[in-house]
Length: 416
Ligand SMILES: *Cc1c(COP(=O)(O)O)cnc(C)c1O
Image (tube, rainbow, N blue to C red; front, side, top):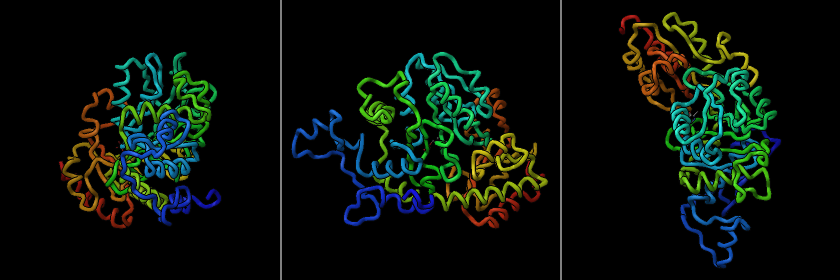
Protein backbone atom coordinates (compact mmCIF):
# COMPACT_ATOMS: atom_id res chain seq x y z
CA UNK A 1 0.00 0.00 0.00
CA UNK A 2 2.69 2.49 1.05
CA UNK A 3 4.18 3.03 -2.43
CA UNK A 4 0.78 3.70 -3.99
CA UNK A 5 -0.47 7.25 -4.44
CA UNK A 6 -2.80 8.66 -1.79
CA UNK A 7 -5.81 8.61 -4.16
CA UNK A 8 -5.25 4.89 -4.82
CA UNK A 9 -4.69 4.07 -1.16
CA UNK A 10 -7.95 5.73 -0.18
CA UNK A 11 -9.89 3.64 -2.68
CA UNK A 12 -8.35 0.33 -1.58
CA UNK A 13 -7.60 0.91 2.12
CA UNK A 14 -10.71 -0.75 3.58
CA UNK A 15 -10.06 -4.00 1.70
CA UNK A 16 -6.31 -4.00 2.35
CA UNK A 17 -6.30 -3.07 6.02
CA UNK A 18 -9.31 -4.95 7.32
CA UNK A 19 -10.24 -8.63 7.63
CA UNK A 20 -11.82 -9.73 4.40
CA UNK A 21 -15.07 -11.54 5.29
CA UNK A 22 -16.49 -13.64 2.42
CA UNK A 23 -14.37 -11.65 -0.03
CA UNK A 24 -16.40 -8.53 0.75
CA UNK A 25 -14.53 -5.37 -0.30
CA UNK A 26 -16.30 -3.33 2.39
CA UNK A 27 -15.99 -4.01 6.11
CA UNK A 28 -19.37 -5.50 7.12
CA UNK A 29 -21.72 -3.41 9.28
CA UNK A 30 -21.69 -5.25 12.58
CA UNK A 31 -24.57 -4.02 14.73
CA UNK A 32 -24.10 -6.42 17.63
CA UNK A 33 -23.87 -4.71 21.00
CA UNK A 34 -22.71 -7.82 22.87
CA UNK A 35 -20.06 -10.41 22.11
CA UNK A 36 -20.22 -14.01 23.30
CA UNK A 37 -17.28 -15.73 24.97
CA UNK A 38 -17.52 -19.52 24.78
CA UNK A 39 -14.73 -19.72 27.37
CA UNK A 40 -15.52 -17.34 30.25
CA UNK A 41 -11.80 -16.82 30.81
CA UNK A 42 -11.84 -14.94 27.47
CA UNK A 43 -14.00 -12.11 28.80
CA UNK A 44 -11.89 -11.89 31.96
CA UNK A 45 -8.72 -11.56 29.87
CA UNK A 46 -10.39 -8.96 27.64
CA UNK A 47 -11.47 -6.85 30.62
CA UNK A 48 -8.00 -7.09 32.13
CA UNK A 49 -6.36 -5.99 28.88
CA UNK A 50 -4.46 -9.29 28.46
CA UNK A 51 -6.30 -10.18 25.26
CA UNK A 52 -7.70 -7.84 22.59
CA UNK A 53 -11.40 -8.56 22.05
CA UNK A 54 -14.67 -6.71 21.65
CA UNK A 55 -16.74 -6.87 24.83
CA UNK A 56 -19.45 -4.24 24.35
CA UNK A 57 -19.95 -2.05 21.30
CA UNK A 58 -19.89 1.26 23.20
CA UNK A 59 -16.14 0.63 23.49
CA UNK A 60 -15.39 -1.12 20.19
CA UNK A 61 -16.75 -3.16 17.31
CA UNK A 62 -15.28 -4.59 14.13
CA UNK A 63 -16.89 -1.85 11.99
CA UNK A 64 -15.56 1.10 14.00
CA UNK A 65 -12.20 -0.66 14.15
CA UNK A 66 -12.21 -0.92 10.35
CA UNK A 67 -12.66 2.85 10.06
CA UNK A 68 -10.03 3.49 12.74
CA UNK A 69 -7.51 1.34 10.85
CA UNK A 70 -8.07 3.32 7.66
CA UNK A 71 -7.92 6.72 9.40
CA UNK A 72 -4.74 5.80 11.24
CA UNK A 73 -3.14 4.62 8.01
CA UNK A 74 -4.29 7.81 6.23
CA UNK A 75 -2.49 9.96 8.85
CA UNK A 76 0.50 7.60 9.24
CA UNK A 77 -0.46 7.20 12.87
CA UNK A 78 -0.10 4.51 15.50
CA UNK A 79 -3.85 4.25 16.11
CA UNK A 80 -7.17 6.07 16.04
CA UNK A 81 -10.34 6.36 18.09
CA UNK A 82 -13.68 7.31 16.52
CA UNK A 83 -16.61 9.14 18.11
CA UNK A 84 -20.23 9.96 17.29
CA UNK A 85 -19.40 13.51 16.14
CA UNK A 86 -16.44 15.83 15.72
CA UNK A 87 -17.41 17.65 18.93
CA UNK A 88 -17.51 14.32 20.79
CA UNK A 89 -13.97 13.56 19.56
CA UNK A 90 -12.79 16.95 20.81
CA UNK A 91 -14.58 17.08 24.17
CA UNK A 92 -14.04 13.40 25.06
CA UNK A 93 -10.34 13.48 24.17
CA UNK A 94 -9.59 16.72 26.00
CA UNK A 95 -11.56 15.68 29.08
CA UNK A 96 -9.57 12.42 29.12
CA UNK A 97 -6.22 14.19 29.01
CA UNK A 98 -6.47 17.29 31.23
CA UNK A 99 -6.56 17.66 34.97
CA UNK A 100 -7.67 20.44 37.29
CA UNK A 101 -4.80 22.92 37.63
CA UNK A 102 -3.43 22.34 34.12
CA UNK A 103 -2.90 25.29 31.83
CA UNK A 104 -3.59 24.85 28.13
CA UNK A 105 -2.96 27.17 25.20
CA UNK A 106 -5.63 27.19 22.50
CA UNK A 107 -6.20 29.12 19.31
CA UNK A 108 -8.44 32.16 19.54
CA UNK A 109 -9.70 31.36 16.04
CA UNK A 110 -11.62 28.18 16.81
CA UNK A 111 -14.76 26.55 15.49
CA UNK A 112 -17.46 28.18 17.66
CA UNK A 113 -18.58 25.06 19.55
CA UNK A 114 -14.97 24.10 20.30
CA UNK A 115 -14.37 27.59 21.67
CA UNK A 116 -17.50 27.29 23.78
CA UNK A 117 -16.25 23.91 25.11
CA UNK A 118 -12.86 25.38 26.11
CA UNK A 119 -14.59 28.25 27.90
CA UNK A 120 -16.63 25.69 29.83
CA UNK A 121 -13.42 23.85 30.73
CA UNK A 122 -12.34 26.95 32.69
CA UNK A 123 -15.27 26.35 35.01
CA UNK A 124 -13.90 22.88 35.74
CA UNK A 125 -10.60 24.30 36.97
CA UNK A 126 -8.45 24.19 33.84
CA UNK A 127 -6.66 27.42 32.93
CA UNK A 128 -7.19 28.24 29.26
CA UNK A 129 -5.33 30.94 27.29
CA UNK A 130 -6.80 31.87 23.91
CA UNK A 131 -3.96 33.13 21.71
CA UNK A 132 -3.38 34.33 18.15
CA UNK A 133 -1.78 31.20 16.67
CA UNK A 134 -0.82 32.80 13.38
CA UNK A 135 2.55 33.57 15.00
CA UNK A 136 4.38 31.14 17.28
CA UNK A 137 5.61 34.04 19.43
CA UNK A 138 2.14 34.39 20.99
CA UNK A 139 2.22 30.72 21.97
CA UNK A 140 5.72 31.08 23.42
CA UNK A 141 4.61 34.14 25.42
CA UNK A 142 1.57 32.30 26.84
CA UNK A 143 3.56 29.32 28.16
CA UNK A 144 3.46 28.85 31.93
CA UNK A 145 5.10 26.28 34.21
CA UNK A 146 1.83 24.32 34.38
CA UNK A 147 1.19 24.33 30.60
CA UNK A 148 0.50 20.82 29.31
CA UNK A 149 -1.03 21.24 25.87
CA UNK A 150 -1.35 23.43 22.77
CA UNK A 151 -4.51 23.09 20.67
CA UNK A 152 -5.14 24.68 17.29
CA UNK A 153 -7.05 24.29 14.06
CA UNK A 154 -5.03 24.21 10.86
CA UNK A 155 -7.17 26.61 8.85
CA UNK A 156 -9.84 28.52 10.75
CA UNK A 157 -13.35 29.29 9.65
CA UNK A 158 -14.90 31.68 8.74
CA UNK A 159 -11.96 34.11 8.36
CA UNK A 160 -9.37 31.53 7.12
CA UNK A 161 -6.55 32.34 9.55
CA UNK A 162 -3.70 29.84 9.17
CA UNK A 163 -1.85 28.66 12.28
CA UNK A 164 1.96 28.84 12.39
CA UNK A 165 1.94 25.07 12.74
CA UNK A 166 5.50 24.05 11.92
CA UNK A 167 6.98 26.60 14.34
CA UNK A 168 4.44 25.73 17.05
CA UNK A 169 5.34 22.07 16.51
CA UNK A 170 9.04 22.78 17.06
CA UNK A 171 8.22 24.74 20.22
CA UNK A 172 6.00 21.96 21.58
CA UNK A 173 8.64 19.34 20.85
CA UNK A 174 11.32 21.37 22.61
CA UNK A 175 9.04 22.00 25.63
CA UNK A 176 7.55 18.45 25.66
CA UNK A 177 4.02 19.85 25.28
CA UNK A 178 1.17 17.80 23.87
CA UNK A 179 0.29 19.31 20.48
CA UNK A 180 -3.20 18.77 19.08
CA UNK A 181 -4.25 19.92 15.61
CA UNK A 182 -7.88 19.89 14.46
CA UNK A 183 -7.29 19.25 10.76
CA UNK A 184 -10.93 19.14 9.68
CA UNK A 185 -10.56 22.06 7.28
CA UNK A 186 -7.43 20.82 5.48
CA UNK A 187 -7.41 17.00 5.33
CA UNK A 188 -4.22 15.11 4.65
CA UNK A 189 -4.79 15.46 0.88
CA UNK A 190 -3.36 19.01 1.15
CA UNK A 191 -1.74 19.14 4.58
CA UNK A 192 0.01 16.61 6.81
CA UNK A 193 -0.38 17.65 10.45
CA UNK A 194 2.15 14.95 11.34
CA UNK A 195 4.78 16.76 9.30
CA UNK A 196 4.32 19.69 11.74
CA UNK A 197 4.96 17.39 14.73
CA UNK A 198 1.32 17.14 15.81
CA UNK A 199 0.94 14.62 18.64
CA UNK A 200 -2.76 14.07 18.00
CA UNK A 201 -4.84 14.89 14.93
CA UNK A 202 -8.56 15.53 15.35
CA UNK A 203 -11.04 15.47 12.47
CA UNK A 204 -14.74 16.02 12.17
CA UNK A 205 -15.55 13.14 9.82
CA UNK A 206 -18.85 14.91 9.13
CA UNK A 207 -17.09 17.36 6.81
CA UNK A 208 -14.76 16.58 3.88
CA UNK A 209 -13.94 13.02 4.96
CA UNK A 210 -17.49 11.67 4.62
CA UNK A 211 -18.36 14.55 2.33
CA UNK A 212 -22.05 14.21 1.56
CA UNK A 213 -23.85 15.70 4.55
CA UNK A 214 -25.70 12.55 5.64
CA UNK A 215 -23.55 11.23 8.50
CA UNK A 216 -21.90 12.60 11.66
CA UNK A 217 -18.58 11.38 13.06
CA UNK A 218 -15.28 12.40 14.64
CA UNK A 219 -11.85 10.91 15.14
CA UNK A 220 -8.55 11.32 16.89
CA UNK A 221 -5.32 9.83 15.53
CA UNK A 222 -2.07 9.50 17.49
CA UNK A 223 0.89 10.22 15.21
CA UNK A 224 3.31 8.34 17.49
CA UNK A 225 5.54 11.43 17.84
CA UNK A 226 4.68 12.35 21.43
CA UNK A 227 6.48 10.78 24.39
CA UNK A 228 3.61 9.91 26.74
CA UNK A 229 6.01 8.81 29.48
CA UNK A 230 6.62 12.51 30.18
CA UNK A 231 2.91 13.36 30.41
CA UNK A 232 1.81 13.44 34.06
CA UNK A 233 -1.91 12.80 33.47
CA UNK A 234 -1.79 9.20 32.24
CA UNK A 235 -3.18 6.96 34.96
CA UNK A 236 -0.96 4.01 35.99
CA UNK A 237 -3.63 1.58 34.76
CA UNK A 238 -3.29 2.95 31.21
CA UNK A 239 0.51 2.91 31.12
CA UNK A 240 0.43 -0.16 28.88
CA UNK A 241 3.45 -2.03 27.51
CA UNK A 242 3.44 -0.16 24.19
CA UNK A 243 4.26 3.38 25.34
CA UNK A 244 2.94 4.90 22.11
CA UNK A 245 -0.54 3.65 23.09
CA UNK A 246 -0.78 5.36 26.49
CA UNK A 247 -2.70 8.39 25.25
CA UNK A 248 -5.18 6.50 23.07
CA UNK A 249 -5.73 3.88 25.80
CA UNK A 250 -6.76 6.60 28.24
CA UNK A 251 -8.91 8.30 25.56
CA UNK A 252 -10.64 4.95 24.84
CA UNK A 253 -11.37 4.31 28.53
CA UNK A 254 -12.03 7.79 29.96
CA UNK A 255 -13.30 9.39 26.79
CA UNK A 256 -15.14 6.80 24.71
CA UNK A 257 -16.15 4.18 27.30
CA UNK A 258 -17.04 6.53 30.18
CA UNK A 259 -18.49 9.46 28.24
CA UNK A 260 -20.11 7.14 25.74
CA UNK A 261 -20.38 9.13 22.49
CA UNK A 262 -19.80 6.06 20.30
CA UNK A 263 -19.90 6.17 16.51
CA UNK A 264 -22.67 3.84 15.28
CA UNK A 265 -21.50 0.98 13.03
CA UNK A 266 -23.72 2.10 10.16
CA UNK A 267 -22.13 5.58 10.34
CA UNK A 268 -18.62 4.09 10.32
CA UNK A 269 -19.49 2.19 7.15
CA UNK A 270 -20.93 5.31 5.46
CA UNK A 271 -17.82 7.31 6.40
CA UNK A 272 -15.54 4.61 4.94
CA UNK A 273 -17.37 4.92 1.62
CA UNK A 274 -17.03 8.72 1.68
CA UNK A 275 -13.33 8.46 2.41
CA UNK A 276 -12.75 6.53 -0.84
CA UNK A 277 -13.48 9.66 -2.91
CA UNK A 278 -11.97 12.24 -0.53
CA UNK A 279 -9.00 13.03 -2.74
CA UNK A 280 -11.10 13.45 -5.87
CA UNK A 281 -13.78 15.58 -4.19
CA UNK A 282 -11.41 17.72 -2.17
CA UNK A 283 -9.09 18.51 -5.09
CA UNK A 284 -12.08 19.62 -7.16
CA UNK A 285 -13.49 21.74 -4.31
CA UNK A 286 -10.07 23.37 -3.77
CA UNK A 287 -9.71 24.11 -7.50
CA UNK A 288 -13.20 25.62 -7.60
CA UNK A 289 -12.44 27.74 -4.52
CA UNK A 290 -9.26 29.13 -6.10
CA UNK A 291 -11.10 30.02 -9.31
CA UNK A 292 -13.93 31.67 -7.38
CA UNK A 293 -11.58 33.61 -5.10
CA UNK A 294 -9.84 35.11 -8.14
CA UNK A 295 -13.21 35.91 -9.67
CA UNK A 296 -14.45 37.59 -6.47
CA UNK A 297 -11.28 39.60 -5.93
CA UNK A 298 -11.76 41.19 -9.34
CA UNK A 299 -15.46 41.78 -8.80
CA UNK A 300 -16.29 45.47 -8.17
CA UNK A 301 -19.23 44.68 -5.87
CA UNK A 302 -17.32 42.55 -3.36
CA UNK A 303 -15.57 44.55 -0.67
CA UNK A 304 -13.17 41.86 0.57
CA UNK A 305 -12.31 38.20 0.04
CA UNK A 306 -10.78 36.09 2.81
CA UNK A 307 -8.98 33.14 1.27
CA UNK A 308 -5.38 32.05 2.00
CA UNK A 309 -4.57 31.52 -1.68
CA UNK A 310 -4.63 35.26 -2.30
CA UNK A 311 -1.29 37.07 -2.06
CA UNK A 312 -2.84 39.79 0.14
CA UNK A 313 -4.04 37.26 2.76
CA UNK A 314 -2.01 37.86 5.97
CA UNK A 315 -0.92 34.20 6.18
CA UNK A 316 -0.59 33.57 2.44
CA UNK A 317 3.09 32.66 2.65
CA UNK A 318 2.55 30.48 5.70
CA UNK A 319 -0.23 28.65 3.84
CA UNK A 320 1.96 28.29 0.76
CA UNK A 321 4.71 26.65 2.82
CA UNK A 322 2.39 24.36 4.80
CA UNK A 323 -0.30 23.30 2.31
CA UNK A 324 -0.20 22.05 -1.24
CA UNK A 325 -3.54 23.76 -1.90
CA UNK A 326 -5.44 26.53 -0.13
CA UNK A 327 -8.56 24.71 1.01
CA UNK A 328 -12.14 25.15 -0.07
CA UNK A 329 -13.59 27.65 2.36
CA UNK A 330 -13.58 31.40 2.08
CA UNK A 331 -15.53 34.38 3.29
CA UNK A 332 -16.63 37.38 1.30
CA UNK A 333 -17.58 40.78 2.63
CA UNK A 334 -20.36 42.66 0.88
CA UNK A 335 -20.50 46.47 0.82
CA UNK A 336 -22.00 48.33 3.77
CA UNK A 337 -25.72 48.81 3.38
CA UNK A 338 -26.31 45.66 1.29
CA UNK A 339 -28.85 43.39 2.98
CA UNK A 340 -26.89 40.12 3.09
CA UNK A 341 -29.94 38.03 3.98
CA UNK A 342 -31.70 39.27 0.84
CA UNK A 343 -28.50 38.69 -1.13
CA UNK A 344 -28.17 35.06 -0.01
CA UNK A 345 -31.82 34.55 -0.97
CA UNK A 346 -30.86 35.48 -4.52
CA UNK A 347 -28.57 32.46 -4.84
CA UNK A 348 -30.29 29.59 -6.63
CA UNK A 349 -27.77 26.78 -6.86
CA UNK A 350 -25.82 27.64 -3.72
CA UNK A 351 -27.54 26.43 -0.56
CA UNK A 352 -27.95 28.51 2.60
CA UNK A 353 -26.91 26.12 5.40
CA UNK A 354 -24.58 25.85 8.37
CA UNK A 355 -22.26 23.08 7.30
CA UNK A 356 -18.87 22.76 5.61
CA UNK A 357 -16.97 20.34 3.47
CA UNK A 358 -19.91 19.11 1.46
CA UNK A 359 -20.16 18.24 -2.23
CA UNK A 360 -22.60 21.17 -2.49
CA UNK A 361 -21.58 24.84 -2.29
CA UNK A 362 -22.98 26.45 0.86
CA UNK A 363 -23.42 30.05 2.03
CA UNK A 364 -23.99 31.33 5.57
CA UNK A 365 -24.31 34.81 7.11
CA UNK A 366 -21.91 34.42 10.07
CA UNK A 367 -22.36 37.37 12.41
CA UNK A 368 -26.09 36.75 12.64
CA UNK A 369 -25.83 32.95 13.15
CA UNK A 370 -22.72 31.15 14.42
CA UNK A 371 -21.52 34.35 16.14
CA UNK A 372 -24.91 35.18 17.61
CA UNK A 373 -23.72 34.27 21.14
CA UNK A 374 -20.39 36.13 20.83
CA UNK A 375 -19.78 39.53 22.45
CA UNK A 376 -19.04 42.62 20.35
CA UNK A 377 -15.46 42.49 21.62
CA UNK A 378 -15.02 38.84 20.58
CA UNK A 379 -16.46 39.55 17.15
CA UNK A 380 -14.18 42.49 16.52
CA UNK A 381 -11.14 40.49 17.69
CA UNK A 382 -12.00 37.81 15.15
CA UNK A 383 -12.71 40.28 12.37
CA UNK A 384 -16.40 39.35 12.17
CA UNK A 385 -18.89 41.94 10.96
CA UNK A 386 -22.49 41.88 9.74
CA UNK A 387 -21.52 41.93 6.03
CA UNK A 388 -19.61 38.64 5.97
CA UNK A 389 -20.86 35.56 4.14
CA UNK A 390 -19.00 32.28 4.64
CA UNK A 391 -18.78 30.01 1.63
CA UNK A 392 -17.94 26.32 1.63
CA UNK A 393 -17.15 25.50 -1.97
CA UNK A 394 -18.38 22.22 -3.42
CA UNK A 395 -17.66 20.15 -6.49
CA UNK A 396 -20.20 21.59 -8.95
CA UNK A 397 -18.97 22.82 -12.32
CA UNK A 398 -17.10 26.10 -11.80
CA UNK A 399 -19.02 27.77 -14.64
CA UNK A 400 -22.35 27.07 -12.94
CA UNK A 401 -21.04 28.43 -9.64
CA UNK A 402 -19.71 31.63 -11.20
CA UNK A 403 -23.00 32.12 -13.03
CA UNK A 404 -25.01 31.72 -9.82
CA UNK A 405 -22.85 34.16 -7.84
CA UNK A 406 -22.72 36.66 -10.70
CA UNK A 407 -26.47 36.66 -11.09
CA UNK A 408 -26.93 37.26 -7.33
CA UNK A 409 -24.35 40.07 -7.45
CA UNK A 410 -26.05 41.84 -10.35
CA UNK A 411 -27.56 45.13 -9.20
CA UNK A 412 -26.41 44.47 -5.64
CA UNK A 413 -26.58 48.20 -4.72
CA UNK A 414 -30.36 47.86 -4.97
CA UNK A 415 -30.72 45.32 -2.14
CA UNK A 416 -30.54 47.56 0.91
C1 LIG B 1 -17.64 20.93 12.17
C2 LIG B 1 -16.38 21.04 12.92
C3 LIG B 1 -16.22 20.42 14.16
C4 LIG B 1 -17.33 19.65 14.83
O1 LIG B 1 -17.70 18.52 14.11
P1 LIG B 1 -19.16 17.85 14.21
O2 LIG B 1 -18.97 16.58 13.48
O3 LIG B 1 -20.14 18.79 13.58
O4 LIG B 1 -19.44 17.67 15.68
C5 LIG B 1 -15.01 20.55 14.81
N1 LIG B 1 -13.99 21.25 14.28
C6 LIG B 1 -14.10 21.87 13.09
C7 LIG B 1 -12.93 22.61 12.55
C8 LIG B 1 -15.29 21.79 12.37
O5 LIG B 1 -15.39 22.41 11.19
